[in-house]
Every structure is written in C-alpha cells, then in structure tokens.
Image (cartoon, rainbow, N blue to C red):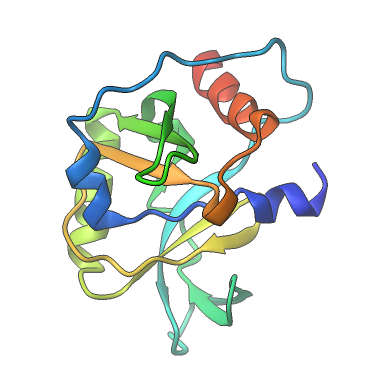
Length: 163
C-alpha cells in the first residue's frame, strides 16, 4: 500500500461526534469486489504530546507524538464495520466493537479522558484526537478532510468481513 494511502486513512475519531452519531441511520456496506494485499494494521493506542518512559516517539499528522507500545484496540476487536458518512457527508466507516473490544475501548477512553488516543495505520500515526468523552461500543472513523477513497473503505471492510 503506498504511503499516501496510509496517511489518507487519516482517521479522526471525533469522540464527541461518535456518541452523537451512534443512533444515525447508516448505509449498507459497499464492497466493490476482492481487495488485494494484506489486511490493514489499524490500532488505537494511548498517546501523549510529551515524552512518556517506555513509549515510542512517532511522527504524528501535525507533530511528533509519543505512543504506547501496545495496541489497546485493533481491528480484531471490531465485530462489524460498514460504510457511513460523517457530519459533513464525507465517506466514513462506522465500527461496532465486539463485547471485549467495547470493554477495551471503554477502558482506553476512560484512561485517556482529556488526553490523546493515537490511531495508527500500518505503523503510521494518522490521527491523534483528544478524548472528550468515554467511548463504548461504537466509533465513527473518517479519512480526514476529504474522507476515504473507495479503495481504502473496501480494504478495511473486506478485512472485517473475513474475520
């Protein structure tokens, strides 16, 4: 996957919006066909703008960021994913976590309340939103200002469907 795709999957987990958008009607998943290549490596990790012993310094979308070495939540913790839209109508992916994944996200967001969560895609920090409220069993991820392209959506949805 070209590096530009990893950065275009600039997943902004707008935590306040997540809760507000949970009851919204969503579109059916759209899979254009088989998606070649390895599954995407997507994880949610505790993060900080200041150095934390034992954490890895990574390049963030705007500045260097320190990221916990262990993923708190991964795509393996996702029960269902479907194509959706964000509040501006850009393509997005709605995630429903497994029971274990929901507990992990609840724990991560509670521990990071007022702090950052890094969304890491294929080894690159693509977004690092501040946690404004606790996240439970659902999240909406977007591809940044212009949204995802269809290939990116297909790749993530295909992986979740293969599990």
